[in-house]
Image (cartoon, rainbow, N blue to C red; front, side):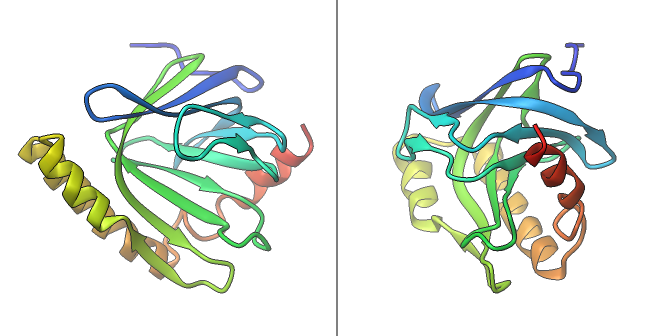
Amino acid sequence: MHARPTPGDPVVVDYRKWLDRQHHRFAARALGDDRHGTWLAIPAGTPLTGGPRTGTFRRTSVVLVPSGGWWTAEFSSPDEELPLYLDVCTPPLLTRDHLLMVDLDLDVLRSRDGTTWLEDREEFELHRSELGYPRWLAEGAARAAELLLESVRSGREPFGRASEPWLARAERL
């Protein structure tokens, strides 16, 4: 059993793609835990490297690493264009200073007006074929995506208001 981060600990967030290809990477800081999982802060200006999304985070956001499940969630201010961005991925592995998961292409997004959708189905199908996703991996990702879509649409926590105190805490860092 690996030690988990304690509040204030720096954590490297490392999204990979299947077959251990670098996807993107950034630094975060542990905020704490609740019944939904471990919350990490990403301060505004944090560099994002290693993949198609490079640059810096414009606004402070938080990442939820669930206690169980095939996803991670990034929450930002409700006035942002996309205040909720869920990555479907292998179950995240979190140690005291490192978060590692394999991004499986599918994303569930919620816009500022509440519109929710599943993105990148085509990329998922392409990678499923080209990269040879094993059946268990493809089925786990597809199942997670559908459950997440339904959970976000219904406002089931942690996709309702659970992120609000964590975002407030991250803003104070």
